[in-house]
Image 1 (cartoon, rainbow, N blue to C red):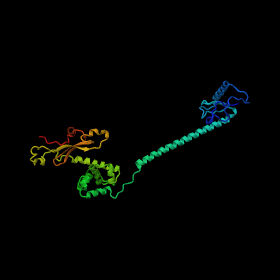
Image 2: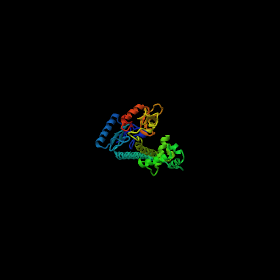
Image 3: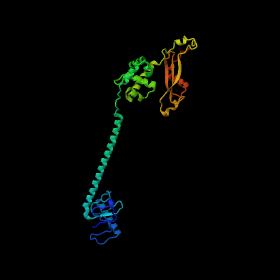
Image 4: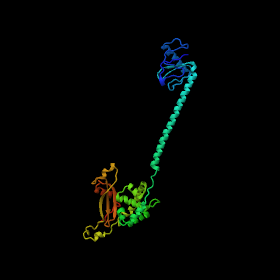
Length: 347
C-alpha cells in the first residue's frame, strides 16, 4: 500500500510522521507505476476513514496535528491542511506516535500543575507577609530618660506648671484622680498609673492635642492612648451624674447672693441661677459638617448649660449642631429632659 503526501504543510506544522514523503503530489501504487485521479483519491480516502471509524481504531478528537490513528488506512488533517494515508505495516509506528502524544500532554499537565502551585504559593506568601507587617510586627518600644509617668510627677511638683498643662492645680488633680479611682471605675494597670491616664485626658482636652503628639510625650502606642482616654471619659461621665445637679433640688431657700444684694432683692427673689449657650469646636466628618457651621467658618457644637450663683453647673446638654438656634435647644430640652431640668419653686 502506498501513501499520500499532497497538502502536508512545511516547517513545524508539517503533518509528517513515519511514512510521510515530501511535497510531491499523486497517489503512487506499490510498484510506483501509474496514478489515479483526484476523484478516485477522495473515494479511496473516504472508504478508509469509514473503515477506521467502524473498527474503533481511530481516536477523536485527534491530538496535536490530528495524526493519531491505529490500524490500516489514512486519516484527514482536521486543520484542512491535507490528508495522510498510512500503510498496513505502520501500526506500531501509529501506536508509538499516540504514546508520544499522550506523554507530551501528561508532561504539559504536570508543568501546568507546578506553575499553578508556585503562583498560589507566591500569593499566599505575599498575604502572610502583609498580615505580619500590619498586625504582628510591632515597632520598637519608645525609650526615653523621662517616661510619661515621670513627666506627670515633674509637672505636678513644678509650681504653676500643673495649671498651665493640666488646667488645674496639683492638689485638685490628685483629689480628682483619687475620686475617680475609688468611686467611678478608673483603675491603674501594670503599664500605666491612673494619674498618668487622667493627665493624658486633660492634656488632650485642654490643648487639643493629637494622638501622635501624646504618643511622643508619654511614650505609649496610639492604641494605648486611645483606650486610656476612653476609660477616663467613661469614669467622668459616671461622675457627672452625681456632680452636675442642684445642691438643693427643691430650691426652698433664697441664695444669699440675691437676698444680701440690694440691687437684686426683691426683684430676683425666685431666681435659681443663670442659663446660657456656648459654641465649642467639634471634629465632624466632612460630609456632615454643614449643620455644624454657623457664625464660625469651622464645625462647632452648641452646648446649653445652667449654673447656680455659686458657679456650680446644675444642668448641661451637649451635642447640638452649631447652627441650631438657642430657642430650639431650650424648648427641646424642656420636652425631653423636663424631669431633671432645674425649675424654680412655684408661686
